[in-house]
Length: 430
Image (cartoon, rainbow, N blue to C red):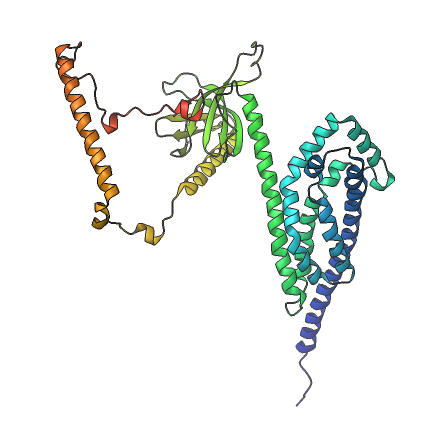
């Protein structure tokens, strides 16, 4: 009987040890790249602070408010990153990022101000000859390696994205029993929130640029596209199929998060609006349903049907891929809009409340005085209507003999506000 160890045991132990060694090698490689990239990042921040922020402050080339608009919190960011670099060079990754994350508000401030900084810098380059010459002189220094100030200002945003990937790799290759595991995990979460903030701000800025572009393409100023909460989705030419079977006409359609806008090109010989579009219809997507119509295009292109509260629209395209993309975009926009408008009530809000209020609260002096005033106004109104009825019966009008000239509207006869006035658009809103 042999007491030799199983041949599987040494192999299992060996494979586990190999896995641990592989994790350690990945962690060491990631840590080395992180330290090297942090050293380069701090040098670039130092260039901006030394050759731009400090010198501009000493020379007074730009006012303080303009300097703050352009450079924001980059000087404070430079200081906290120098402290982080000291921790990283000593191998204290967990402690370094734990302290660094307590100052992430500086990065949030910088992220929210980056578009303002770019715009202020562009204005000063065009406006101030002294600043333009100073900027060109500083950028020509060999330390800048032909880098422009516009590129250096976006470094903190790029660095946050790099931190997110570095920290994820470090955390994945750090054992749970390591004291730095919890610190690195918290740092990943905190820095990922800042990275998401950067992406959200970039999307909002891109959407704003698209809305401005569409607004400039539309004739006049009555069709308002630049409104808060509106998101641009897509645009393109589609043919509208009339209900009477006449020839389908191509129209330009703009799809937003809440409306579908139909427009037609202006006359090309118009001296001002020759390259613009005139808004024809605005279809709200809130109560819209979209369906595909089969068997009407002979396998060439496609046809989709849009049903609104007061209208129905048939759109056709000769491109099958294009009409399918429109169908998916419309379904997604309508679905998101409906889910956004869904109201979720709490349980206590759904409980039935008594219609009448507390009877003791109805006997207060203020309430009795208010009721007295209302009764007086109602009596005066009845007397006025009665006297007016007698006066109008003595002078009968055409088709209204013996009746008062004032007519009370029923609730369903109240005039509705015109949608053109409420939206500020000259288009027909359905």
